[in-house]
Each structure stands twice: as structure tokens, then as C-alpha cells.
Amino acid sequence: MLGQSPASSCSRSAARRTSNSGGSRVAISSKQRFAALGTVGVAALVLAGCAPAPEAGDGAAEGASDFTACMVSDEGGFDDRSFNQLAHTGLENAESELGVNVLEAESATPDDYAANLTTMVDQGCKIIVPVGFKLADATAAAAEANPDVDFAIVDVEGLGIPNVLELNYDTAQAAFLAGYASAAYSKTGTVATYGGAAIPTVTIFMDGFANGVKHFNEVKGKDVKVIGWDVDSQQGSFVDDFTNVSRAKEISTGFLSQGADVILPVGGPLYQGAAEAIREGGQDAVILGVDSDLAVADEQYADIILVSIMKGLDVTVLDAISQSVDGTFEGGTTYTGVLENEGVGLSGFGAFESELPSGTLDEIDTLKQEVIDGKYPELSPSSPKV
Image (cartoon, rainbow, N blue to C red; front, side):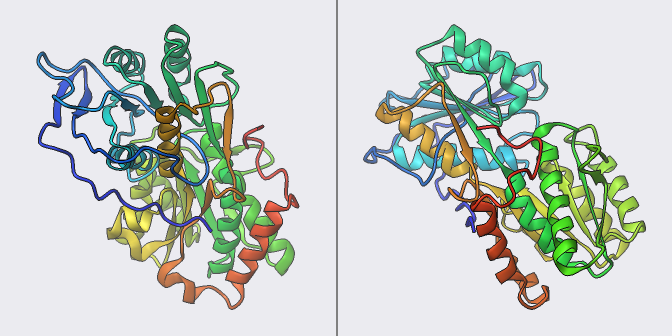
């Protein structure tokens, strides 16, 4: 299984400066580390980006490396304890391990995407990592206008631009395992899921989860129900916002009232709504994390996190930056993280391991190998095509 990404232990230098403009944070780190540059990482690739122009007088500190790697978030921000934060860890690791300079920008709204990317180009970024499919159009425009800059965008495929590396993750594979585990764990026979929006990068988790429950029912002769998502109709429960924790809490409370004791929230910080609903209602229920190991990223909820469905974003971001540094970056190509290359996987179950029925972990390991062997090729219509 894919292990948790190590938290970055590097600290920013005193030369790191922030300024605010148009609702987007710009952070410039000028710390230089003379680490040996070389091939790094396990599997694959990157994300990047930055933000509005720094205030007058800001810029790279004296003596900084001549290579700058950059990252632009979507509106979830780098502290979402999920997608953006894990990608940002990869950027921090590139700074500490490769000795590159980094620039970063948080987008407050979609209107910031193009401006942030333009700022990064203007600041001399050699590689820019836009975090998420929402930045696809802005990234395509920036990449075509700046063919000498490398771009590595997450959860986007089909752009076919020579200087853009597309990073994709078949999270349905890992979610399939998590769905099986959730069905095995459930005491009520009802599990649930909801998403931030009805978009492929969200529904791919929900598809895999629901299909994992279905598979459990088939092999065990059980009837565990999934509420919140129907794979066949592709209809379900959505917050329609990735920051509205209150609405997520309302949806979760409804699920709990219907007997759900396992909830999969798919949408960055929206997991907080499910966690609050469980805590305040005194429910004997658990949640699942997505993207990062949520029990590590947000320890206050570790006692109600069954398992996390993980993307290897930190590793692939670091690897993509490394490739750009050493001149082996392959634009115009697509990387797909799957169970086989450890681009996706499950975290550990922690204290919940002992609460799973006997033999469940062995069954999950067997199921993982069956997925790798191609026994279940269509776990989600939203799975990457490459």
C-alpha cells in the first residue's frame, strides 16, 4: 500500500516574504540549499504555480539559485489538509532536497488563476505547477504563450501541449479497496458519500467507493447500502462548493440519521463537516480521508478516521520538478498514478485495524493485486484514459 508522504521538515528562511493583492497570497522563498541535483522520487511528476506580483523590492534574494519552481493553488488553498496541501509538500521538498527557489500563490477565486500564472512566468519560473483541473484553461493559455516554461498540471488530460506534463491519478482503484474495507467495518450496514461538486475528479472517488461496497456484498452475500451516490445514474449528494463546511455538516447529519456509520467526504476541507456532525451528535461513526493521510494531516480527528484514499502528489510533484531541473522533463505526455506504480493507495487503518473482521486486511491485499492484474478494469467512467 502507498505509505504516507512524510511531512516536510524544512523551515522557510527569514527572506521569505508575503504580500496580499487581489485576494491571492504571494510567497517568495529565497532560501538556497546546495544539495546535489539528481533523479528523485518513485513514480512520476509535478504541479506548479504562483501568484500576483510581489510588492516593489521583493524578488529572489542575493545568491539564490537560478532555478525557480512555482505553484498555484485553486481556491482550496495550501492549508486544506488535502489536495493542495499535499502538492505543496512536494514543492517544499523540492526546495529542501534540490536546492531550488520556490514561489507560490493561493487563488482566492477562479478569476485569480490566469493572473497568478502570468505572475509566475514574469517572475522567471522555470516550471509552474497548477494544482487542479480548474486551472486547465488558464494553464493551456499560459503554456502556449510561453513554450520555454515547463508546466505540470494535476488532474487534467487531453491538452496535448508540448511543454505541459499532465498528472492524473486513478483514485477509483484505491477507493475500491476503501469501499470494501468500509463495508466490512460497518456495523449498521449503511455507508455514505458526498462530494464538493459533480465533477470527474470527485466522482471517481465515489465510483470506486460504491463499487468496493458492491464487491463486498457480492463475495460476502451481504447487503450493505450506499447512500449519497448511485454509480449507474451518476447522481448523488453534493455541496456544490469546496469550502462550505456548514452545508457538508448538514448532509452528513442527514446521512447519520439514515443509519450511516461510515462517511466518505470528497472535497478538501469538507471532511470537517462530517467530523463535526459525528462529534456533536455523539455518533459511533467514522469518516474516510482523501488525497492525503488525513489522520496525520488533521490529528484532532484521527480517532474517527477509518482510512484515507491517497494520491502520491508530494512524490510526483518533487519528481516533476527534479526532471525539469535536470533537463529530462517530458512535456506533451501524461502520467497516471495507479496502484501498481504506487501513484494511489491506502493509508494504514491505525487503531481501527483491530476492529476490522478477521481476514479483512488479507482480503484487501488480494483485491489490490486483482486490480493491478486488470480483473476490475472499469471501476469508474471518470478514470484517466491513459
